[in-house]
Image (cartoon, rainbow, N blue to C red; front, side):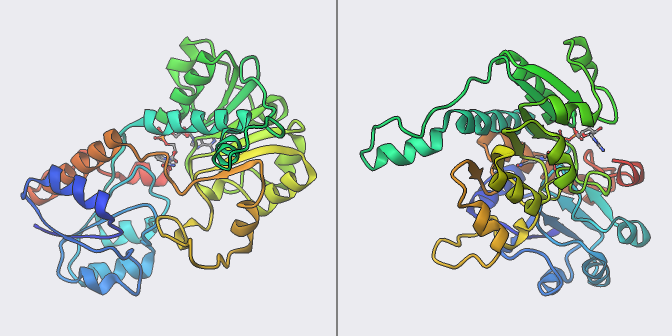
Length: 335
Ligand code: NAD
């Protein structure tokens, strides 16, 4: 089967070629899938896409007209899909439901430790030959309260990681995770979590009800000097509100691995260009903020698992069987 693979870099190609073993005919495009590029997929029964490819109604109709019937997502999240068009046109959509939750939870804890102990600042200083400790005073994570929103695969591992670091852990979700209940980690209301947490880490999906869950009002109820970390999806955080919170000092530190307008910038090199997004440019300039370019998943283990599951999903579709990573109607309506 011919597959048009969008948004690919050298590392995507390497892992997909290794997993494919020449069973599918993969054509790699570096460009992302959007209305302007979807003619490239004409005649391909399947397309393979990543987090920032655009699968809105117009793109999906064009893909359908061009003969595409299957969409293989190389990721877990599926907030970039127009669910209504997917269902009306009858596309088969498969994703990678689990690949390496520890890749993201370990990275999240890494960001938190880096913020609390000012490791990035220290790294920059010592490279300049500056070994003074001025400006590097940190704080211990042990005995702090860590609040986790979303206790699925990644959130649960992050919560257990915090517990291992000696934190008091509070969690919030629309459904309880039995591993956390068994570990004695309490579920609380989102308001209690906001009020009592020194560190807030987001691990729920981006849905209409979670859009901008960090906003001006919710920041007001948080502790002074709170640390906020988002390695989930950019739209969970109102960037203007966190900029205001950082300026007032209400937010003590912030780490973002995702950004609500990231599809314009992330996975690209802008080092010799002017960043025209004023909010992104502003947020990059705070000394107590770490921004990374959607990197939390990026480990050898995760890339290998993503490639393996993606190729299996595509082969299942080609063979007329239900892909293991199928995105069902129920998941789309109530993920
Ligand atoms: P998951 O489906 O296992 O867990 C998501 C959890 O969020 C579930 O327990 C669900 O009940 C909960 N949830 C749903 N609605 C909620 C709400 N309104 N309030 C609170 N909780 C709610 O997903 P996962 O594999 O743990 O992934 C979590 C998120 O991490 C995903 O949204 C994904 O987009 C993101 N992610 C980011 C990266 C990265 O590289 N930065 C990589 C993989 C996944």
